[in-house]
Length: 220
Image 1 (tube, helix red, strand yellow):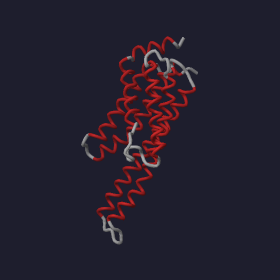
Image 2: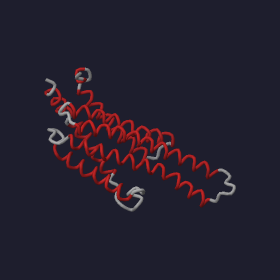
Image 3: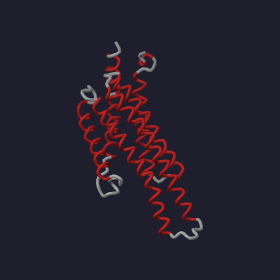
Image 4: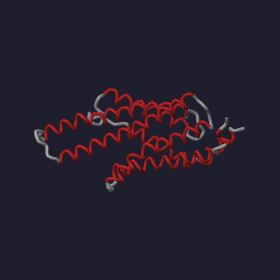
């Protein structure tokens, strides 16, 4: 069954663009803009959901041009990755919230130094989930980049840069494990991968009419 007969590709293009920018805005707002705590939490939790929906839209955009194993596998990896990033953020913020409440309570028999060490040990759980997110998004980005090879809109530059950034992200996380690369004083290539997806969304916005024309030409 050809689902393009039921959901026009123009809607998938619009869906991917809207959610792609929403993911960027939610992440940047939660990370860098001073907002009420509950709003920051909401934006942080929504980031993964927006990224998941953007990935789904991108799947149908690429699929309308060419179907490949890399596309299907990369989409699956990215969808799983978004579940891990939401899990990481929830565990992270839960740990922070409980730690802050413990600091204000009576700590009979527990020194401040012991409390700090306990927090570090518990906090390692969310750091491990963070690395898991990086592993899956590295694999998803690598495969999606390969699926874009030769695309008339995205060109080969998105394949080359996507493969490079995803390999660097995975390699640095593997080398410095169990510490995240940034915590070990090295380079975190996560922002490079994020910039790759932002660039992909911007090009999708600019070239949306051509993407629709390419898809419609291939429907037969």
